[in-house]
Image 1 (tube, helix red, strand yellow):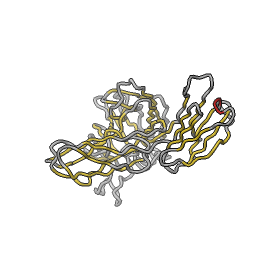
Image 2: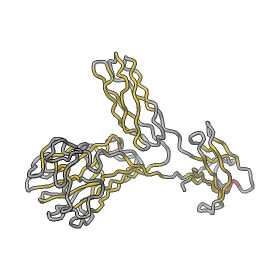
Image 3: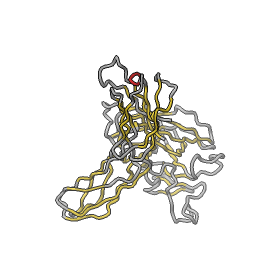
Image 4: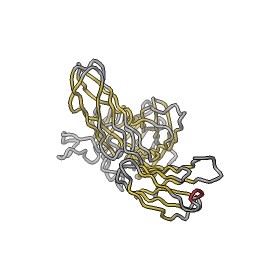
Length: 365
């Protein structure tokens, strides 16, 4: 049960308000998080369905035996050297991998080591807690050189973890980094980058699987932002600079300015964030890139309390809320009233005895 708690006392100055806002954990989209996206038609390395065969692998470089070199060794990820996609057999991981069939593998020699990076469309925001979790595997029959995972911004480390988790041979263990960014952090507004790698040049292999990134945020929504590019007077693409938060339906996207006309676009959601914006019509006559305006997400359910005490319940029209009251900040809570939010919000007034010294909270139904 999530709610907002408010208390107004007669000894406080007029309209003094104490408010708490609930937090929500949101998964941010990671491309090819479990390394299943590699497909092919070469029947030496791929089966009839295009999936990597057991024991076969791709590599950015240094492939031998059952491997092959490819500039797209891991779709969605950038890398180099001894790294790629691997479909391990039961010899390496008797209990299997943690998600799907494949892993990312990284090896090192005494002169080079592989590394994987991915830059997300989302950017770091203030007053948020980011949590990166990655399953790290130590294949049986090989040496294990350890692991490194991290969150980066503009090439600078935001939070990293090196070998803090013990990984048994033939098994996986979950490594996690957590960071909270304040409003004065130099990383605010920078694109989020994930890095996976090895801590040093020790040879042998580490596998990675099931990469996930979450952010804890307040229940208020945030509007997505994006920029357009033009080619020969036409809108040729739209890049998301922030996916926003709190969307329940695909927002309307409009393009204005730039000297042209006729361009249109459509937003596509991943969870409650804008993941992609697709150009529907390119328009014509643009001399500069038009401004991209994305509709704001709906307001989160909230309650404001005034001296009356007056409670304003806001949220999507038709949403249900239960307003509870208590004599102390920890309860016990009892239902004061139930409300269905109107199109312009709903105002409630409590004139019962003792109302100005009570606590209130809203609970979304």
